[in-house]
Image (cartoon, rainbow, N blue to C red; front, top):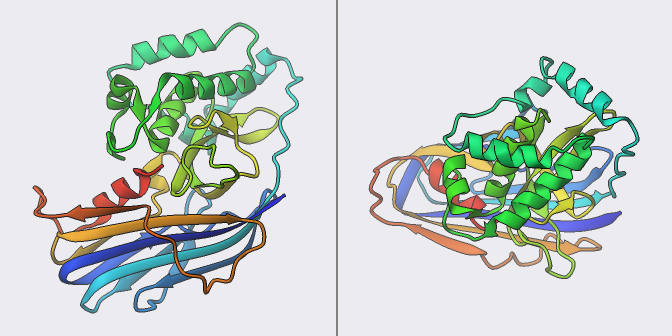
Length: 321
């Protein structure tokens, strides 16, 4: 088991007051046998009433509004969580039997949701690569691990060249990106071979700073393994997800798991600061000072004049993955 204390701060500063800010947040850590939430607090500007509901994928979602004029919006999430090591599948059932099970599941809810393929130009090239991995007598677990290794080895981890709007064709051409790009690519490859796959958002927790994606939100993939269930695979770090990963939400793709999104009325010019700090071991007091922003993003005279900060927040919250 491992204990972590996480602070995730999102702060918007506007050049002039804005009004009617309506927001949705997926910042509630998942609570289950693998992940025990000891404490979770949200501190939001003006202390709005947060209404919550459970979405189609089982995620806890919060919604709130700020009607009064304000020149700053700050969202602070503070989490104490204990994670447990994942018990890996015992891969002793014949591969043909496992694949036959996946074929039957293809027409069942909710698995069919996680098998839907998007249309893109490089599908034939990517299918060729997937076919090389899908060798005779390979089990779904073998294929999942091999695909995580393929994405990790073939794609360069490089910040700032993609956004959440980047398509598979763009990522494939660049052969580079950040965590959400690695997860996006692996999702497509798994689904091509008939393995249900879902997008996972959360955090990766440091020990010796040897992993990519520390100090920001992180993304990886859950692959469905017959006779076992969902198994997390992190292509950014080429590892099986265990007690180093903290989960926030799952979905078909990034847009189902966006940490924060919303709309407002007012100027499009603003500054966004996002920071994530994670401490191992016994939780610190929540009164400790917040972390220094991991990045600062300024929007000045954008080409598209719009009253929504959602696109910029979605893009920038993931660019440090």
